[in-house]
Length: 354
Image (cartoon, rainbow, N blue to C red):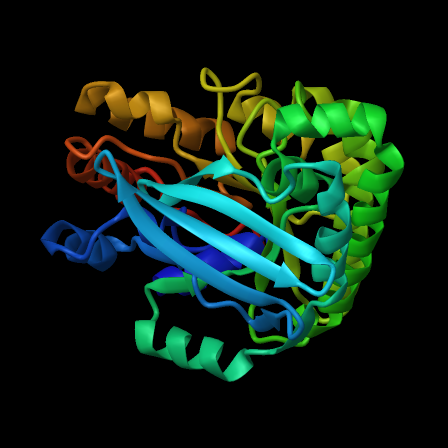
């Protein structure tokens, strides 16, 4: 099987010839070791080519990049007919750190609401297919829906502290943004379902001490279920990047429409082991993040961690080993090769269809 075929088989719940090993496109540079790992079966998960294009025709966007004390900052200005908004970010490895969020004062509700309602979407299928064909069979191109609505407001638009104040003092305004985001996301589901992508991540990074079980049940899970219903009609799969402590809502996830739990990080890094997750979610695919703490251990320990994960994942279907978080620059080459070696020996699978 090709690396992509292994990923697709595992996501569908089938038995590939061996447990897939995957890594985000931003987590590994093009180099000799990367080529070796791809030859051994490593699959690159590419998330940079969207299957739909989104734009806001009535919002003018300008960016200004400058340096201050050796740090590069980017200020983005959004000019709407009802007010101006700004954000300030700085680079942080493969992502960016938000210095100033979109929402900064109560007067910002009106232009943010305008921006959400101004969004337009169209298919970007041809570009997705071209990029996938160019990459080849050792890449899996995954779609994305974005953050769930309340989490988008909490993390992207406001930040946790500001959200807590607004949730307490102006909840009606927050929920007005939420309702607009729900309507906008709902319009994208049919376009995603008709696209050439097989699997889509929807939100993630929620934590129980911030989102809370009650809000997760009321404002997150229903969107998993609604999106899954639309996607499943076209044979597509839905997952979420749940890489934190999940015990608080494990039962809610079990009953949700999610097909796979992506970036699940086993104990000791979180409050659930892989065996716990298998027991809690027997019908879900576990696309794990190899425990980040193990990347600091000696190579024999990395190998033994891989073997232990395989034991807990038995019989081995509905299981993928991924790299979704940072790995120390001085460790990724040896660690990835160690994981690959074990998966290529101990991770061989036999179909149970007999």
